[in-house]
Length: 355
Ligand code: SF4
Image 1: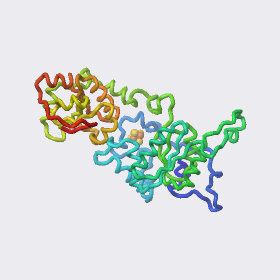
Image 2: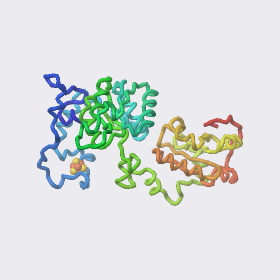
Image 3: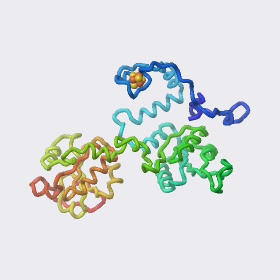
Image 4: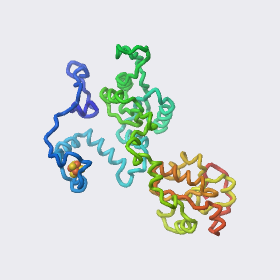
């Protein structure tokens, strides 16, 4: 971020005394001299004791200036808002967009700019809609805003195509009063320009990576791929639990009592289901989980007729951060034939019904 690199606090203008914003005076490199550091502590990745975390050790002599930075009112406000997103067991309960929305509310931002790539028009519309639903005023600006042709930037270009214009995006957002900017899918380098040119705080929502379906961490291995990790962590039970185990769990007191999701069709559910289960059709699960499963640490058991659909549901839930999801072995058929309790009270058909 240009202000930090230039030593100016977020939110403060960079305009110089002559009225310019000082852009022309920006250095072309932000490299700093390498300070003399003890070779043995040069790399945090090879450090074994991680004493900074366990004993608050200050290996690099940065504690005092850091605390000075956090004492600045605006930085302190940001740090406290960031803490409120994860403290008191909240870590892992909000996805990134939910965090962004809550952060905006906490910081008092209402006009939220979105600098997006023209290659993501549908995602941009969906993001706009979510921001509106959250009571924010989105200001959407595509990367080609400004109509700058590539040859106007680079004379060696032969085609007369319109260029991405992150500097223009920054200016449109500035003109339209964005208090905070969400970057979505800009090309490598264009994102750097956007960050450099923006004069308001920003965050990144989507990082473009055409090779890895826009999940760049996947190139580092399966540790960053939730589905690969799900498969790696799978034990021989394939996250199956037998009916007697579920029955024992259902006898436990809150909060260990699991939420039982019944994926079967409405008619099958109405004819008989596990007492207390919630009907949650597989195709409705992406929308329903936010409503019925706010706690990602909650124990969940998925049930279908024969435990095939429920395997998909468990994989989906795991990918969404629900690490405590299980599949009822043999499904409702075996639960019933093994003589476990069944609630045959007919309930109205619907997308989801609580028994
Ligand atoms: S103690 Fe912390 S800061 Fe120091 S080298 Fe180890 S990981 Fe890095």
